[in-house]
Image: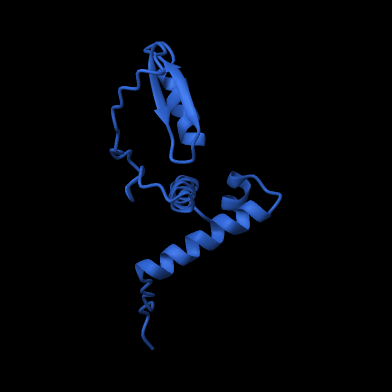
Length: 116
């Protein structure tokens, strides 16, 4: 009798479907993400990565690459004579706008933009 274990090959598409299902199941559960991962024997860091991927896909963003690192996004510089406020302004595709961004609050503005 052979002692070889059968290897299971999972395609990228299958793996993606499995992770999407886990992310959705966790959302529907009353568990914290960490508790869900422990219960389903999932790596917490991997689960967090897939949560970001799912979130970005749902938003139609391309701001996060599959490696989880931040990517460049298109920026347009507009000189609008009607609206001169100090600092930088971010206008999102949804129509939301973040005004008055300066060196002192750029981290807050980026966190807010990521949450929108």
